[in-house]
Each structure stands twice: as C-alpha cells, then as structure tokens.
Image (cartoon, rainbow, N blue to C red; front, side, top):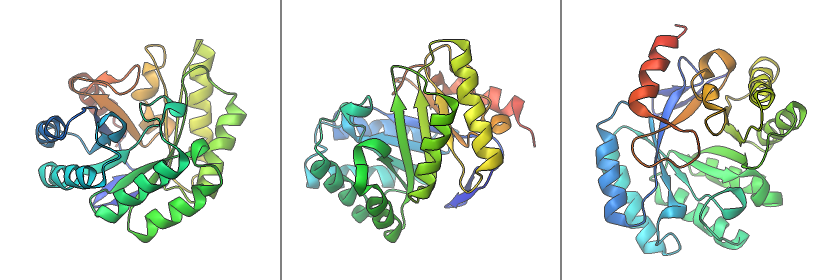
Length: 252
C-alpha cells in the first residue's frame, strides 16, 4: 500500500489513522466539539458540514472553518458536505456543492476535502484538480447504505477514483451477509496489492461490518472512523474501544 504525507501524518503507513467526526448544527457546538477532540489521541477530525445549519452562508462557514483550524492545533482537518444522495443531510444541487468545495479550499483551513464520486459526475476531475491547486488533498468517496456491490464493482469504482486524481479513494457499503463483509475486505486487499497507486479507505458499515474498521493495517485500509459521542455512520466504534485494539493489532 502506498503512502501520502499530510503535515507529517503518513497515511497508508502503520496502523490505520483514526478520524473523529463532528456532527453538530451550530458554530458554538462545532467549536466546542473541536476543542474536546483536540485533546484526544486521534489523527484527523472530520467536520461534517452537512449537519452545520449555516453551510450555505459563506461568512458563517468561513468563520467556523477558521475557528476549527485554530482549536484543532496539529490535528488534520477533513471537511465533508455529505449529500442526501450519499446518505447525508445536505439537499445540495451540483452548483451548490461545487460552490461549497471552492469556499473550503479557498479558506486555507482544510487539509483534506471529501468530494463525492457519483454526485460530482463529470465535474469530478476538475474539482480534484482545483483542490490540489490550493494545496488540499482529496478523499473521493462513494457510499451504499442499501447493499454491498460485487468485489469487481467495488474495485472498479476505487480505481476510477484513482484515475480521476483522488489522493484517498473511499468506499463505504452496507453488508447483508458475512459474505458481503468478506467481499469488501477482498476488494480492499486487491487495491492494496494490485492497485497501490494511492492508499484507500474502506469500510463495511453496521454491526456486521465492524471487523472492517479494525483490520485496516493487515487488509489495506489506511484510515478508519471512530466516534466519541455522536456517530456519523452506522457501526462506528467508540474511540476508547477502537484505539487500544488498533495498538494491539499493529504489525510494526
């Protein structure tokens, strides 16, 4: 598996890097959560802006991003506007989504920006290129909350994200059986072994897919989402449970 370095954090090397999501509606609540997370042993904090009630307000969004950057210190900041089409809260047109992305990278506050693979459509490669021009790494994401596609489809989707220029292709799927969890892990291992141009982030959601959130170092997923209070997706494991497991399973 390859590795990318963001402010000294080597994503794709060693144990999976831990991401904690902030899912709050107001600026004060977002910043309060950011302050709390800054003191925890995590690598990255995700600002789920689709939960933020003022994400369409440029001034409010900029103020919140600047505040987060200040309180998080050396923690990486991932900014995500999860649309309803991908299981999130934002009812955003492509124009609104694109404008949001531009406000994020122009703020200079984000280290990583989540850009959705399918909703972005033909605009995907251009958005990734613009993010890179502003020094922002891109997590290109795809979510299926209903099922787990075939291993071939999952690999194809992740490879398409690589081809579009993504730094960290991400895939989250919902298992209906044990075989679905195995298919996700097989796709992850295939990416690490046969398509190592970038690290990838993968997960099988819900309780059934919990194992996929802890075995990234051996199977090839570079980052994993935990929670410390509110979760942003089904099956996220509490940080105080997940971190010791990752430490115990570390290969190096």
